[in-house]
Length: 72
Image 1 (cartoon, rainbow, N blue to C red):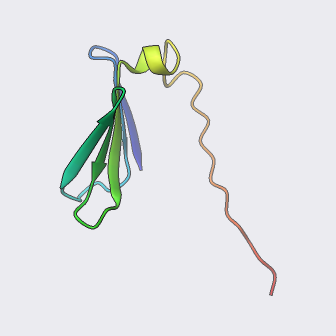
Image 2 (cartoon, rainbow, N blue to C red):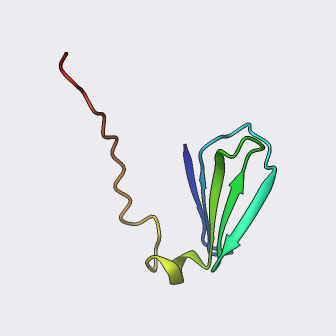
């Protein structure tokens, strides 16, 4: 996963599948969802990101991975 923010154009891109071609895109209120041919989400792009999130979208980035461990 790669998260990029372009302050010049105020765009945020969250990429899930780096080498997957985009087969379809859907825009909802300035948020673009890019899909692979099999329906998986390739990336999410947020237009005017500082208006939709916070003034500096990556300033308070808190990334964590939650793994479910089950005892057998």
